[in-house]
Amino acid sequence: MARRILATQSKTPKRFFLYTFDRLLNTAASSPAAAFTAAAASASPLNHTGSPATPTIDFTDTSALFGSLSTLELLRAAANLHLAAVGPVVDAGIWIMNSKLMDVELIRDAILGSVKHTFYRHFCAGEDDAAVRKTVRRLHDVGLRSMLDYALEYADDEESCDRNLDGFLKTIEATKSLPPGSASFVVAKVSAICPLRLLERVSDLLRWQHKNPCLNLPWKLKTLPIFSDSSPLYHTLKHPTPLTPQEEKSLQISHQRLIKICQACADANVPLAIDAEHTKVQPAIDYFTYSAAIDYNKDHNPIVYGTVQAYLKDAKDRLLLVAKAADNMKIPLGIKLVRGAYMSSESKLASSLGFPSPIHDTILDTHSCYDGCASFLLDNVVKSSSGVILATHNVESGKLAATKAYEIGIGKLKHKLEFAQLYGMSEALSFGLRNAGFQVSKYMPFGPVDMVMPYLLRRAEENRGLLSTSNLDRKLMRKEMARRVKDCMR
Image (cartoon, rainbow, N blue to C red; front, top):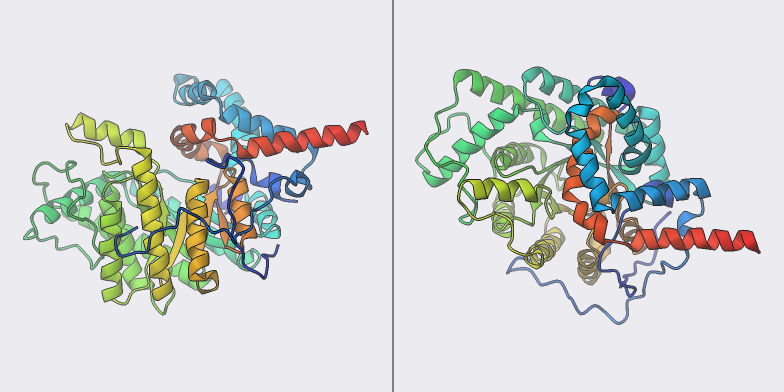
């Protein structure tokens, strides 16, 4: 987690209580974590009516939220938030970062320097070990945990994969020097340890085998279900050629890299959350994830967590199949539930091939799928040894899941359920859930600015709607600044 790594590229209340949001909390905006330092058909549905006996979290005391933040820091955070909420600013930034201007060293240095002190500082945990440890400890001090993400996007060759593996392993090792429990998960991308082209080839073959079960894949390990009958298969329209001996060797080496990461996580007693990616390679990623889960998720302790993207039309069907298979195999299932991060590229690819988008037709359909999957997962956690991460910036989904968990009895879920939001986003939701007695993590990317830029660009693209339309934390910041000005004038 340190520069040496990157060179290679409050206690919660004893009485658990629930909350409802009564102050126009339809969406939650972002603010730096530092600012707060100082379902399935078989599942019971989430209750949209709420409970009259549940108290409301008080967001009116902004001094409690921002008490340890200097006025200068508060102004800087508010400025970053407002800039990120302006669509043209985001569009211009994306255009510049993808332009040939970045090939001019002087201009590139100036741009990266500007990004480092604005958006990077807002959304990332730091460049070196000292900065990351400081951020993790700061969050830990206020009752939040950290999901450490060595922020890589993908690798093209074996050398890059080996370099990335080294970074992941050092990140896992670094968790041992952090306060106990402060690092909730280590995050990894399979595309960082397996060449992207190989993931595409494996995905093609897995899809073709789903179409034609008689197809023999001699390299295939035991895994959980990867497809459902509703899964999109348009990526593979003709019979793919078998893997070459060199590709099979590369696949075996890539699998060994993942096993090393899993073993390191098991030794460090920190779970591994494997990110989902776009559907062109997701079958191979699920194959890697579930085959590793079979080996490492044992003794009522899921070490390997896969990711389900609820914006996909087949998400619930696949989740049900995976949960049933894991239950039959007596494997504790670890699932991170998200809405999804590749909406634009998914729709464009499907359209280019003449197929409908795999994404739900409306945002309401996505919300419904997410809430349904969350309800199913919560029921599943109670009756099994499984674990779940509910990653959401949607206040309504967070409230509904908290209500469901409260009805179940969150004491039963204490060490099996984690809520999560991106670092620098939806802080009000994070702290509201924390105050309600839940474990809450911030998803924290880290690394040198130039290495993290692809991650920041993708996040800017996928979250432009959320950043431009949400306003809760920005309102709280403005209120706190007004309070301080008023105090100075007294």
